[in-house]
Amino acid sequence: MNKGSAPAEYPAAFLAAAARVLRDEGAYVNDPQDAGGATKFGISQRQYPQLDVAALTAAQAVAIYYHDWWQRFDYGALPAETGAKLFNLAVNMGPQEAARCLQRALRACGVVVPEDGDLGPVTRAAAAGVATAALGAALRSEAAAHYRLVAAQSGSDAFLRGWLNRAYE
View 1 (cartoon, rainbow, N blue to C red):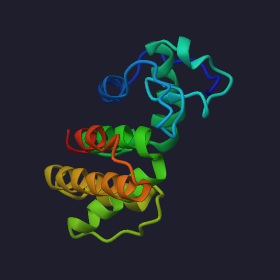
View 2 (cartoon, helix red, strand yellow):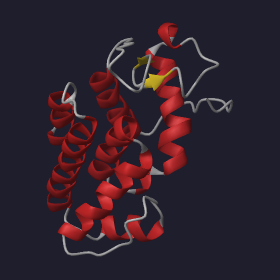
View 3 (cartoon, rainbow, N blue to C red):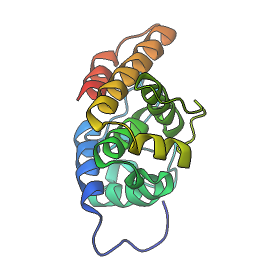
View 4 (cartoon, one colour):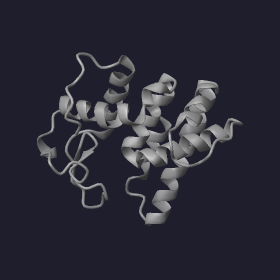
């Protein structure tokens, strides 16, 4: 977790996106079938070994997401709906794979950007130039395709229904 002080007030777009992630990720889970291991609000013990994830509060999770995710990957620089969706997907599938989904979605909207998993200025500019509704539909489709592929490759669809719900919401 970034040691910087929390802002007096988080941006409204972040708060809405974080509320969605907290709802989707939920309470403490340590499912042996889940490669993510012990998590709470989507924050994994593996990624944050210095934390007692089981005791993590929602406010602490929000602070982590703001500093280590929202600011680091600059989701707020995207159109609000796109940034919120990409942030939500990144928490579950990882930021690079979420960026690749966005890049494939842009291609589906007729804009070719490198599919490199980097949410850089080229991808951000392209996302800003595409109709939000069309990009959102394409992003949901790409996320669902990713989740189906992961389930097929793992030989288990134990989490597929939840992943697809997340993709299509």
